[in-house]
Image (cartoon, rainbow, N blue to C red; front, side, top):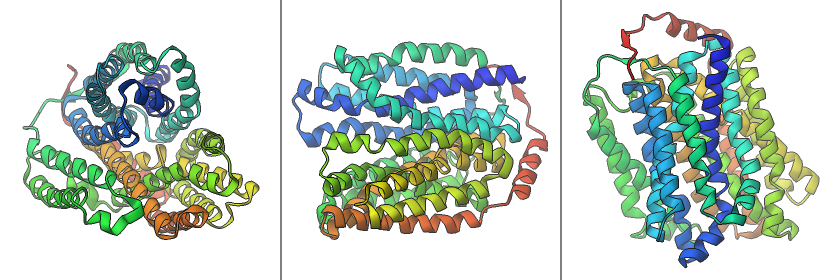
Length: 469
């Protein structure tokens, strides 16, 4: 594939991922309008996010695996189509129940967009160009969270439905361009799909997500043992062992457990969980700012812009650094910046200058963990036949970290008495987790070893493939 074609391909992947990322960022401003339209209470309206997250978790490994089995192009187009259908259902929903069903469909489709896009980059870009490509894709999330609330505010002038209808022409453009540009190769041999493994994984993820979502952080211990949380966490534990048992016996498992025998992939999974935890901890920063500076919630949200800008600028820079320095140096820098930023936030948040310094450090730190670097690692460590599900696994661990973050930060803040002191204690806990991530990063391969592994996978003879998709 020549450079011009690769650039066009990167553009269609960029637009597709941006569409999915924007949908998360622009929903926030619409929640009051949606709540007023359907007359639901504050706790019920949170299911607009929860339904999306639950089905996004389930869709990620399924779509990633299907892309390994049936080809990237068909599954990427399928993901975008499902997302568009969900958007239409939400926009035209006559009831809140139908709206939640549409959000679930959206989440299910969006679950595969980013991991499949990352796998396409691994298939089509040479090892020395993957970092830059992944960096541009990773920058999408910073851009989305920067322009999303603004775009959402503009579209709300015509009604909240337009926040979802706007996805339809974008999705159509992505579908047409994807069918023209994405590679159509797929394996000739298609073993029976591992439905038992997929079912066990779906039950595991749905139970874990729902159980964590129901935790009352103000009464953490008693909440854990309540009937609204404990049965779901126990179900997740049982489903985990069932999933391992099924995958060890499946002819073509939905998640090849042997990829986790590679230290590099195992470290990347741990780093992904920590990165997700650090990212979701930012949700609680406005509460800290309100308690510390007495600003409004709206003003506190604007004070987060340095984090978003640092991520938007840092992601493409990180991508270029990956191609020159390798993942170990980049991730060590990122985890160090994240740790320092969280430490400053936990001890000196009452100083406005130090807060903004911490915000920039955290933004750059997260840009070196989310998006490109961890996906770069698994692209180098896995074969083409496993790239989709390996990318899906990184997304899964990131999302589990995000889910855990809400429970951890909320529990620590509540147990420390809430207010400024409570949130400072919570961010100190996140700083400790970030410190562990530094230790993980030191165990990664150096640049020379990483390049040797990438070349080894590039020279392995590929299995015969058909070009029909």
